[in-house]
Length: 124
Image (cartoon, rainbow, N blue to C red; front, side):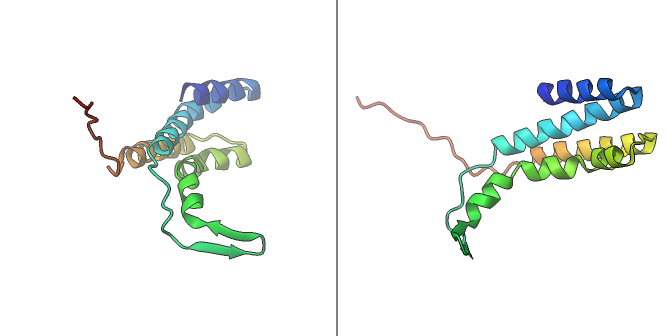
């Protein structure tokens, strides 16, 4: 999250405008939540069907596994994308980005407990 904040703040300073700095903090929170979601994605589900392509089979479970976390980053930064395309940072767009950041944190905090901790006992 710190790296995302530094990069976004550098871009905001380069573009020139304090209103861009207001977008940087919630976007950094979204990217941090996406990193947390990526870290807790669990094992690859190999039991799902494969997609047949001309180049061969594509394991859908692996694709879905790799997209977990990236999906949150893309969806959470949609207000930033809108601001980048329009070029205008309105207070309402900052508020929407803050709402998206709160939603991203809630989404990343919802972790299914699929991994169990097992105690390893030494012989003897």
